[in-house]
Length: 219
Image 1 (cartoon, rainbow, N blue to C red):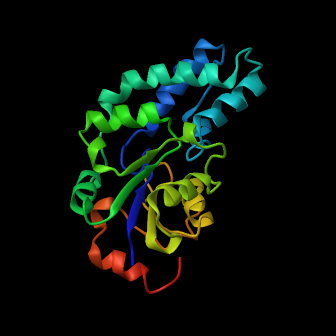
Image 2 (cartoon, rainbow, N blue to C red):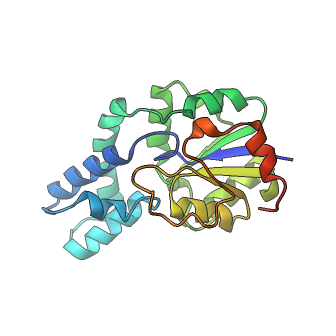
């Protein structure tokens, strides 16, 4: 029996990737990095702000700490949030299953970013639990964030479905022994989703029958 639906945010519920790219490009430029292509950024999709900051601090010899650079990026990104749109089906699936399942959000973004975005779309009150990347030590694809969600909600892995757009995110959920639904977007079409229990073109395609179909095989 499924008891919880757990959503990634960036690239899954909200079309944020280009905004994150813009925020990182400006932040890195302000720190002396003159070249940061979209292709380079895409190699970080599904990881974390700390990963981007750490790699560039090391490769470009930026004399700041990871938290300092992440904070600079966050300030830029928060200013871009009013431009962010939800993906088709995102609002509908959240409102449809609110009250039927426990709803949680497990994102590599910091909780401040998550809450600002959700509040801008009046969705913050729909989730029973929200965990950001700043609330765990090990980032996706490590399962820590999903294991933390399961523990807090009091649900088992086979009672949980995770919705992810990236290979790292999907592997995080599968490493926690959960059902994993992949919804690739234009930036993650070439990711390896071989571990997915279900692959959808859009969240709008998710329904009761597809949820029931997952129960015919173990996660």
